[in-house]
Amino acid sequence: MEVNEKCDVYNFGVLSLEVIMGKHPGDLISSLSSSSSSSSSSSSSGLAILLKDVLDQRLPPPTNQLAKQVVVAATVAFSCLNASPTSRPTMQQVAWKLSKTRPSLQIEFHLITLGELLDTNFFTS
Image (cartoon, rainbow, N blue to C red; front, top):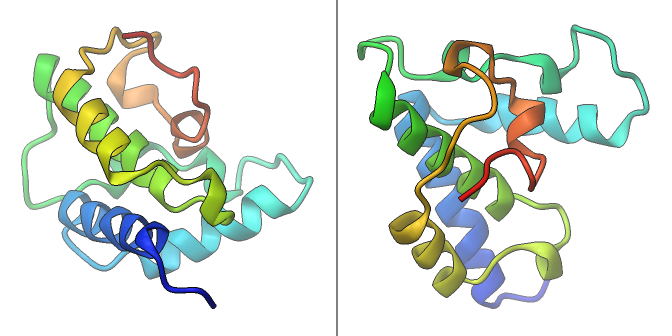
């Protein structure tokens, strides 16, 4: 394994998800990794998990602008976890996306799945 800035980006993604979820995302990352590598699209796959169900349950559900910001943060975090290091964003790209993106959600927050967050065209800036 080559240690470079893309490893830092991956670690940023893990840490970001840990903050969002309130616990280490190891099981979720494994579930998503196996779901995306299989061709099955069953509703039990990790990609069908609702974003609202992985958020830290000790906090109230986000609404309005905060919900949009959670979607941006989660989308960026998942992009940092790309299995291919060359496909991960740079930290400069991560910082820009987090500071500049003002998304318009295409569907209601409580219906967003993790699979949709992995779609780079999920929200429009």
